[in-house]
Image 1 (spheres, one colour):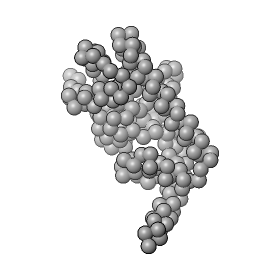
Image 2 (cartoon, rainbow, N blue to C red):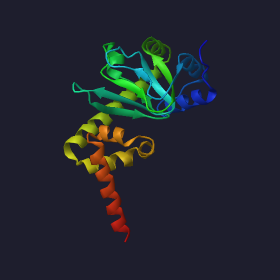
Image 3 (cartoon, rainbow, N blue to C red):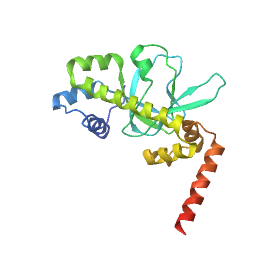
Image 4 (spheres, rainbow, N blue to C red):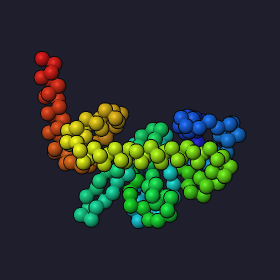
Length: 206
């Protein structure tokens, strides 16, 4: 027997859709009937590199990361997602080729999932959903481009300050090791940056 999706969870994802499109009551019902709910424990995977990514995941509870494992076994965080955010290996999902990313829960989490056949069917039945996911892709591309430029042009301290200003809710929920990996620095160097920022802030208050 499947797990029922609660009204709170459906309301959350419908509010997310409403940021870009407006659905009728019938369309909302069709969309919600296509969703599957998945509960994962801390450190459990929603997807692994080498497997074809079958789902796009909308987080209703918890914190999830996607990361790449390089040839030396080092992890590089690509994305984080908390409540009201989407996450998945989009390249694998769209091309149906093996994924490059691992999708791991950093907290006990719950997600609403859309598989590829369901999404294609929704595009036919509710064409405006294609616009919604196009906007998600556009926003993801813009964020990716900005991140590349930031890595090329800014110091580690500037990148850290940019991160906490852009994602203040993540700063409190992520272990230092994961923030450091996202920024491309060691946890020890991030600790030094934090101490320097704190010291500079104390000086400015005097």
